Image 1 (cartoon, rainbow, N blue to C red):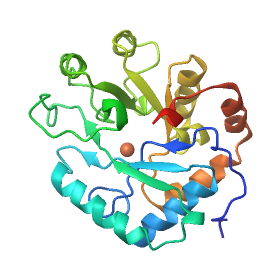
Image 2 (spheres, rainbow, N blue to C red; image 1 turned 60 degrees about the vertical axis):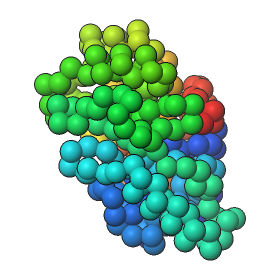
Image 3 (cartoon, protein in one colour; image 1 turned 180 degrees about the horizontal axis):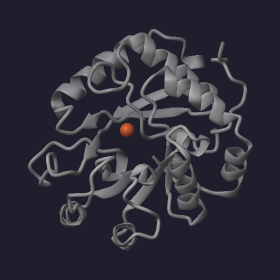
Image 4 (cartoon, rainbow, N blue to C red; image 1 turned 90 degrees about the vertical axis):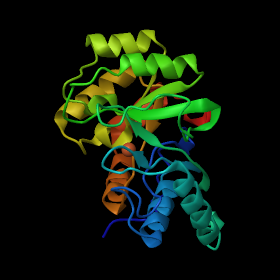
Length: 242
Ligand SMILES: [Fe+2]
């Protein structure tokens, strides 16, 4: 039996989780409000005080921004009945936009859902590197978006010293390592690369990318990980600015 109400507030220094899939029924994340509430309580129990929902926007989950905003407003009403002492603030809904050959979007044509400060969370395909995202990134940057690449450590075709990573850093793109990567949730390679990005000062943010209670349980385990606790003492992140 896992401990839902963990006393270990390891992630308290971060304060904000800016990446999770807890809007029920819109992607591969939470499937119902009960699961969302359990996940939110778990996030709170390990130290997160404010949460942004970031549903997928990609060919496989062709979400519509207006529909997502409506669903989020309904969810907020429903969870307002929960005990606020055990729950983080559910701040806003943004999106995790996939940049690939099937879904890259031209700025200005869509009602893009961003984190505060026009921060746009984006991701690549986890399997294929057959798309050149940089021209699209340039367009978004020209329009004042601040891009954050989700989980750079999870792309098997990109390592920390690759040309594409270096170019993105030169363009001012921020990175967000997944916390669960640091406990081996996605395998050894992602774990190694996750720590590398952090140790090189190349991960401005950390996110949980929580989808459901399988992730929630892994987060409780990660909160006990001594190497993760040490890393949080030695590095600063920008989560609390969101
Ligand atoms: Fe995600």
